[in-house]
Length: 168
Image 1 (cartoon, rainbow, N blue to C red):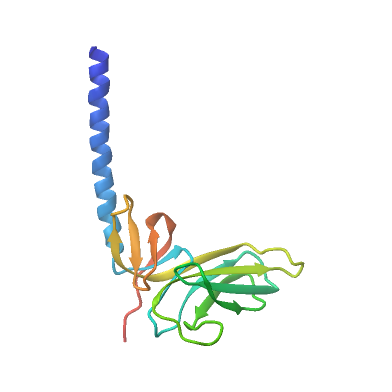
Image 2 (image 1 turned 90 degrees about the vertical axis):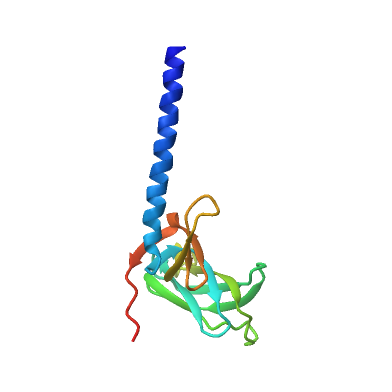
């Protein structure tokens, strides 16, 4: 019984240590508020006025590329032919209009970018969203960043952190 009691006590101390480390980690994550971050993701937040967008990275040159914008229900609202693109980072900007040129309401949208090389094979595309962190939330059981663009992402999707440029 003595060995069992020692094992239980050790597990309790390890649980306490784990809780304390989580608290320290969460405290450090809150330092991201006000920082310019880039996260992996497809989410676009449209304010109803200003164009919005994201950046994609193409693993190789693309002979053709397409961006498909979907509303919160998953319905395709806009298909944009982006044309041929070089390998590397490619910005994608959406003006907030549907395929008929009509302005769409403010809200959350997603953007899926696909690309094909000259042989017609799919090109690997990774998608990033950049914005200033306005809030860190822990209500889902893990830290999640809320960006000024309205996009949200778990901290595990964080790609880079920078100081935002000074406003003129």
